[in-house]
Structures are given as structure tokens and as C-alpha cells.
Amino acid sequence: MNKTVLISGVSGSIGSFLAKYFLANGFYVIGISRRAFVPNVHIDLYRHFSVDITDELAVIGLFKKLRSEKNQINSFIHCVGVSSALPVTIVSKQSITQTSDVNATASMILLREVLKLMVLQRSGSVVNISSITASTHNHGSAVYSSSKVAFEHFCKVAAIENARYGITLNTLRLPVIDQTEMQQKLSDEVEKKLIESTILKRKIELPEIATICQWLISEDAKVITGEIITPGGIW
View 1 (cartoon, rainbow, N blue to C red):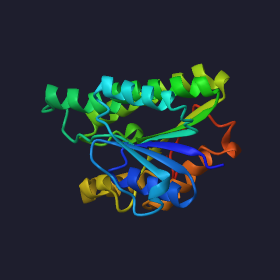
View 2 (tube, rainbow, N blue to C red):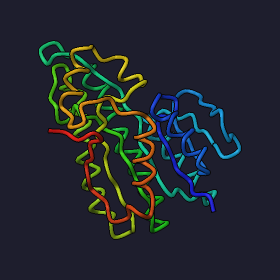
View 3 (cartoon, rainbow, N blue to C red):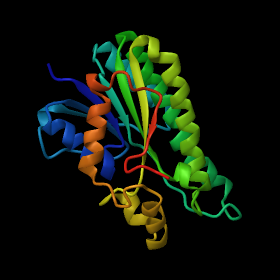
């Protein structure tokens, strides 16, 4: 029986790669993003919802629909995120609010609705895609990293509260991932610093991230929860 994985941010480089990866591996995939996304493989296994996750009513309506259809969500991979790269002394209130709205507040609301469904199922696994900047403290990352750390803490508490329902929840702090939108936005200086902060001292490939995600949502990883994992290792 095919398992269903829900992926947010499927119109982005990481989310779209993961959607195609899981489709190619026989999963049913439900994608969420503001923009349209059509996978080029196994379209019959894919279902898309165009939803802005900052719209709480739209998110609630989406999960009300999934529950009414008795859809089971075996796993959720959260890839949505917006970046901000401004020094603390010039960052605006608008930048702080917009970044926090997506990376923290809206992400918390989305996870809340996912967990409600998984609690009813008495099972489920969640992988939160975060960033290595949460621990490297590089220049310009104050707002972005703070929003990511806030959601990481939310996820940790959620893992503790929902373990009794057979739900696991882990976070991946991604380093520099080759051929992604985020990597293309990095300056050469920042990219070099982030790579040097890892033990492997190299860029990580998208297929490597997909393999880690697939393991974390598998039965083999059912005793792993509440963890923050950095692919490539960190000093």
C-alpha cells in the first residue's frame, strides 16, 4: 500500500525535488505552495493545493477537506521558508514581520493542523527543513535565523507532546545544498564560511537530503524524534 507524504513549498527547489523523488519511489504526494506545481513524473500519484500558509483560514479549510475525505497523511516534510539577509542595524520592522510570519507563525499553524490529523490517526512522522545558519550566526542572518530557531523550538515541544500518539518529529538544519535557490543567493564569502563550518567541508546534494528524509519518515527511524540533525556535520 502506497504511503502518503505531504510536502509544503513544492514550488521551491528543495520541495519540488523532494516531491519528484517521493513520487518516483511510489509514494502518494500532496503538495502545498502558493504557486502552481506540476511534477513531470507519476502525475497520477500527485495532488496539489495552492494555499498561502500565512492564510490561517485557508490552511484550516485544507485540513478540514482532507479529514472529510478520510485522507491519511503518513508523513509531512515542511520546506516553506523565506530568507532575509540584512544587518541588525538596518533591518526594518516589515522585514522582521514578513520573515517571522512565514518561518515561524504560519509554520506553527500549519504544523498544528498536520498534528491534529496525525493524532486522530495515532501515527505520523514530520521532518522540518531548517538552516545551518541557526547555529553559525553569520552576518545578516539575525532575522532569518531567529525565525527558524523559534520554529525549531516549537517542533521540539511538539515532538515531546505528541510522542504518545506514535508521532515523530525531527529537524534538518541544511548546510549549503547545491543547485538550490538559497545556494544561488549566497555570496561567495558566506558560502565558503558555511561550507567550512561543516565537518565534511563540501556542498550537500539534493539526492542526499531526499535519502535522509526518506529514512526519517520510515519505520526504521521510529525511535528518532525531537532531534536536530545537520547533514555534513557541524563543528
